[in-house]
Image 1 (cartoon, one colour):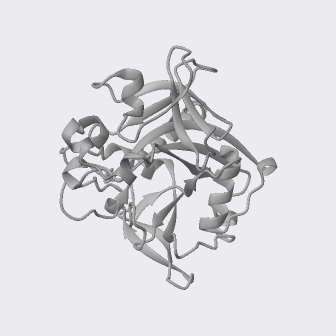
Image 2 (cartoon, one colour):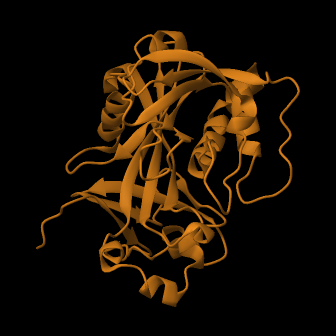
Image 3 (tube, helix red, strand yellow):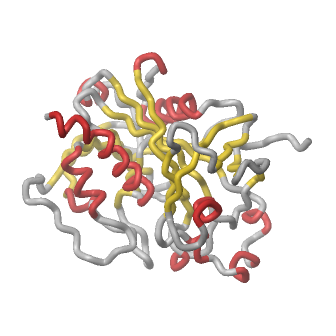
Length: 300
């Protein structure tokens, strides 16, 4: 049996034995066909294989792709033209951590401009899953590596929110796919306020160029700016025009700056240079986070 070198997505439908997904195979499309963009699935990490299946446990979790997902629109000839080293990659697995403070703020980080994939884009802390690692442990490790926040599993509660099918570049108009991931979004609830957590932030400047704590009001505006749509984004008048952001210098020094709220409501451009924005997958995860708050707002 070939030695496993990295965690890859495996697919199982109707109780079939899990098969390793191909790089050019749509994970979402495997379950819902070529038109719909969201499925309900179960997932598990078994023997260094990330298995996504349609046998639902506990109601399952949402799996979604962008309406403009490149894999959805890739022609046979375009797929055949991909380099062999890309075609043989499989579909990688990532983990992203939505860290919620006791006062219901979420931590987002801006990816360093030197990163090859999605530079200058706002995302939750996260990264790859190492061999023999549990998803939660991978999320906590990446959180510590990127932000310096060291949280142990016994001081937080965790919940798998959903899965996002991520492709880079994010649209075919921006070039043929080079990376294909399924990102698992995990909600971590801390008993500390965002100010207590902020005091312990030590971001790695090689990965993170800024950090921000967002509340539900701002998040609602962010998710209303749906990528792939063209209507103008209305920023609610009760939101401040700017938000305080912690910028990280190349040497790791922190300073407070103000950024226009409109930056967080930017949409993914379909051509030209990418811009500073919240990633499409992050918007999906933020929508799921807002749903977890709903019972509290009703009671309040």
